[in-house]
Image (cartoon, rainbow, N blue to C red; front, top):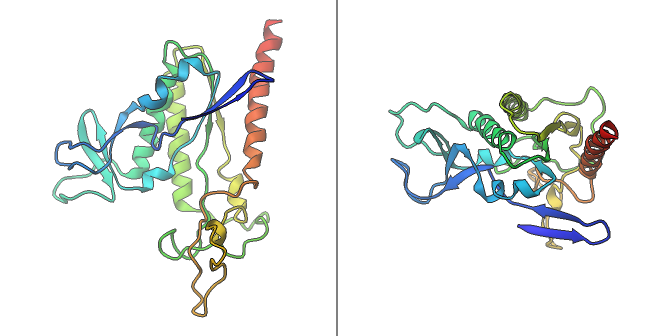
Length: 258
């Protein structure tokens, strides 16, 4: 956890790291050995849930970690996994995309039913990547992308689309379970930021002054990052969207009670 306190406005900003937003463990569980990450998809991560009663505004996001190796547990039973399923004779019921949707519903419904949470929760949707010609570890590239895509140039990314769909579905299911006075809002950046293939560090991800930034004689691109975003960069807009969402909610509440 990291905290920044601004005395002039009595505002504290807290950053809490939770990779999957649900409970995780590396301990031995059933036929999954020790050392492999196990995710309890039906239990929220206590690392941040214990703090939510004291927070006025929460901005959460998740998704890309579901591409990493992990085991999925529901109702205390192993139901699936990502990059891990040793016994092919056992049917896998939940893949990583479905696990993501379940996790979203779990954490949001837990927040919307928490008896002591009355704040505003903003869900930032799945952030698109822009690897072309391969994935992050198979030669994917965003080298030479210097301008945003123009209207009509956007190429659909199947994985981004399905992850966004599962996230929104989980959001909508959670809304139906709400029992407290907290508020939940969706900040949908997925499609519009699909146009910003120019906003990633690309081959400049490394601070090494001798790093390779151009394609080699064989045409292969150098190692690069087309998932995370430059700062400053396009995602500075996210701050503006968060601020506007907060302004509308709290000013609207102020006006309605005056």
